Amino acid sequence: MDYTPVTPFRRTIDAAILKHQAATQEELPPTGANKWEVLRELAAARVAFGLSDRDLTVLQALVSFHQATILGGNDKELIVYPSNKAICERLNGMPCSTMRRHLSNLVQTGFVVRRDSPNGKRYARRYGDEKVAFGFDLSPLVRRFQDICEAAEAVRAADERYKRLRATVSLMRRDLAGLAEYGRSLRPDQGVWDQFSDLAALTARDLRRKLEMENLRRVEAALGVALDHARNLLNGHIAEDMSTNDAVSEQHYQNSNKDSYVFEPRLEKARDEGVAIKDEDVGVSVEHCKNEGDHTLHVHEDQLLPNIPLGLVLASCHEFKSYAEQPVRHWHDLVRVADMVRPMMGISPSAWDEAKRYMGPEEASVVVVAMLERFNDIRSPGGYMRSLSAKAAIGEFSCGPMIMALMRRDAA
Image 1 (cartoon, helix red, strand yellow):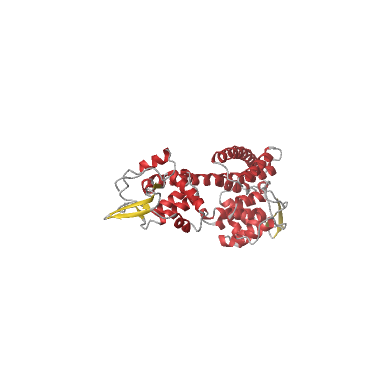
Image 2 (cartoon, one colour):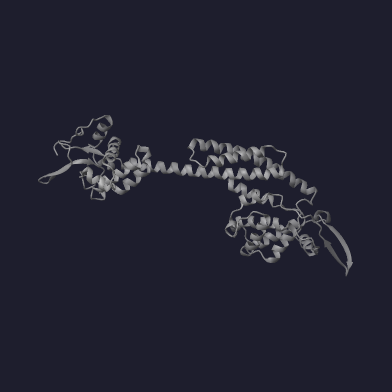
């Protein structure tokens, strides 16, 4: 064609349309662009270009009138000339007024350029080997393809950052709620636990809606400060308990069996391994019975539950839940699940009975579900359970540090 018009038929023109018209005078990239890939990338970056999903629906209908899959390249004819009726038919009966409104936005944003004929009609004429078409020019999709891809990649990266930050905030909120519950049972004298619980509850309420990135960062910062404070309080208390255990070793000694057990051979085995054991360290009374020359060690203990809330165990351990037939709400539920899981882990019945004897069934169950969280890192679960039972037998074991380690791993 000898002349390319820049003004639309019986429509006003503005600076944006003139700018897009001038850009069409540039050469097309030699490789062209796949029209479906252009639409896919533009759908991801539509917000950045001020387009709606309905705008893209109209653009997809226009692109479908171009028969080739590759726009540009060897094919320089990028003008389609469907009637309004044909466009609306491909839009499943969209009203013509609605279609024209979205088409106007595509023209205004520069993804479609009007090439109106002298009378405003859309058609094509052939003059020998030359074809002259009037309609909608799709060449901006090829020229702007690189910019569209970069914008789409930036949008995807921003979405990924947002999802990761939201997941981090959700995990921090869960940890703060668990630490508050645990801390309230350990140090009820501290009034900050109620504040931490309130902060966790407010965060859960805020996460029900889509927060802006800036607001989500502020929530993350507030949770981080609260978690650091909670960990400092709890770590100080655990260190204090461990130092107290060196002097008063009967703390944390639990035994679910009220009967007497003869476990002198186990004490001898511990001594053979180089562990210094004293009768007062065991936390039990020894009666030297002159029955056939044997020494029988009778165990007397109080029936105690683990010094850790069940809710904190459930919040830190998740693997066992896939084996539970029903939700775990009480300690006896956890014991039943641990008894079912431990054969799969390679813990023998004798090792399990020994753990329940020296730790108590509840604390032994906590150890099993905690080991299941780190199952890939434990070479011999049965041997590991026996070693912990040996420590429990002399009052040097508590399951609290195991759960705290899992919480720190989740928070990392």
